[in-house]
Amino acid sequence: NISGALCISQAWPGMARTIYNDHKRFMETYLTPYPGFFFTGDGVYRTSEGYYQLTGRLDDIINISGHRLGTAEVEDVVNHHVAVAESAVIGYPHEIKGEGAYVFVVLKKDSGYMQETLAAELRELISKKIAKYAAPEYIQVTHRLPKTRSG
Image (cartoon, rainbow, N blue to C red; front, side, top):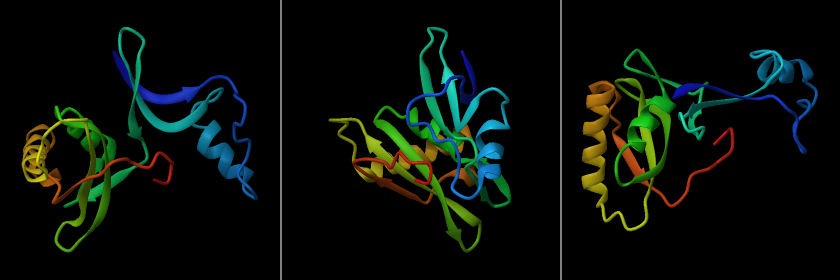
């Protein structure tokens, strides 16, 4: 049971080899952080049985009321809810806090949760596990989430 950065030791077909007109940036982003490995930019959790669970982007940080908070940290808490299959958290401009958390969730099939009930339970869960300031004002149920680096 360990968490860390997801890195790949061997090349694969279709692997990126550069960034157009910026090879230095490619090297700094993907090959320099962990010499000898390709750094994906994702966090990962490996169980004692050898299973891997992606925990989210390591470079996604939002600043809520002066507190730096990783979006993966919030997503991990949200994903522990019994009705949630997966989630994504982004920051949005907030007049008072500077930035707020906006949570997108995909529900498990036949979860039977109403959005208002789910939203209240998720806010409570985040408040308890992380902090009250991290509780999102917006929670949106969606059918699927983007799977690209830029989201």
